[in-house]
Each structure stands twice: as structure tokens, then as C-alpha cells.
Image (tube, rainbow, N blue to C red):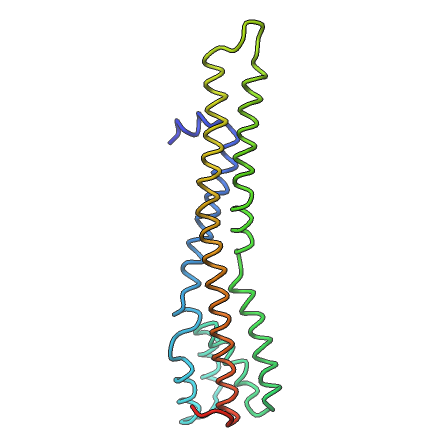
Length: 202
């Protein structure tokens, strides 16, 4: 590995740094954006059943808010359970906006890495070409200088694509996952409001 880095020259360090950040962000989002973490299945049924049995309590609200993102939205709505449906929906929407921001965290950074990695690779390619032409003498290039310049150019181009392609794939995957989770949480929250105010049967 060190031989490759040495052959690629100093521009490769920008791509190595970008790849480390991308791997860390991908691992973090894979862990965080699981359906069981964000919108646990059956949570709405559990909340409705607890409401019928014991009503709203501070312990219940705290447990919901700390349990999952969907639970946080439910807790925001249930704090205004005695208010009108409009007030309850407004509080849910406010909590939903904060939750959406949390779900989309780091995605912009990952998308930026996916976009700039090929450009960083191109930068390395340009540096390699500059080394080739900058080392020209009256009798031409020596094979060693020529080989090093070509190595810098090609390794950086290849590594830039290696970083960009997985980053873009995971960025698109996470965007789709966030959109799906947001729709699911919106539907669950609407059901909760309608059940609480008697316009829908549990």
C-alpha cells in the first residue's frame, strides 16, 4: 500500500483523507438510519394501547422521546393531546422538521466527497503531467522521470474514481432511505392524531 501511495505522489493524500471521512460517514449513517432505530414497527399500536390503559404520563413521554425518532414525534404530539387536532399536528410538524434534519445529517458532506473526488483525482493527473513536462531537458525525459509522472497521473485518477463511486452509491441510498423514513413517520403521526381525536379507529 505504501508503495502505491509513494508512486501516486503527494496529491494522493487529499484523496486518502476524503476516503477516511467517507468511510466514517457511511458507517455512522448505516448504523443510525436503520428502520428499527428510527421508526420501530408496531410503535403506534403500543402507544395507542398504552393510551387506552393508562393515558398520557410524563414517564411515557420521556420513554418515547428517548426511544426513537418516531417516538420523539409521537411524544411532541401527545404533549398537546388535550388541544385541538390542528395544535397537535403543528407540534408534530415542528418535531418532524427537527427529526428530518437529524436524518439528513452528514449526507451533504458525503455527497460533496462523491462530487469532488474525481476532481481531486484530476488534480493529481494534472500534477503528474506537469512533472513530466517540467522535467524536460534538451535531450528529452529520462525514463525514471517519465514513469513517475505517469504513475502520479494514473494512480490519482483511479483512486479518485474509487472514492467517488461508492460515496455516490451510498449517498443516493441514504437519500432514498431518509425519504422513505420521512413518509413512514408522517403517515404514523397522522394516524396517531386521528386515533386520539376519534376520527379513525385503532
